[in-house]
Image (cartoon, rainbow, N blue to C red):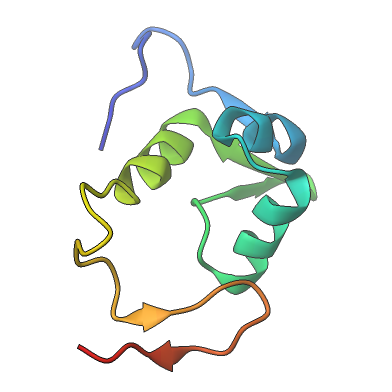
Length: 88
């Protein structure tokens, strides 16, 4: 897990619109990832959804690939689509 860049400061939390901009996604896409359980870790504070900056960075890094044939997951899935096995 990556450390925050300024260890003396508390972790930075972003609301959904800020987190989506940080990742280059729409807010709605990030919300869908949250609903499907395929997105970054989040917290609920006072009824508000917030994302820790380090969690966003870790989630983005977990998707790093070097080739389209790199093994990722063995389940092809997108928002609103049922899980299906990918033939290998």
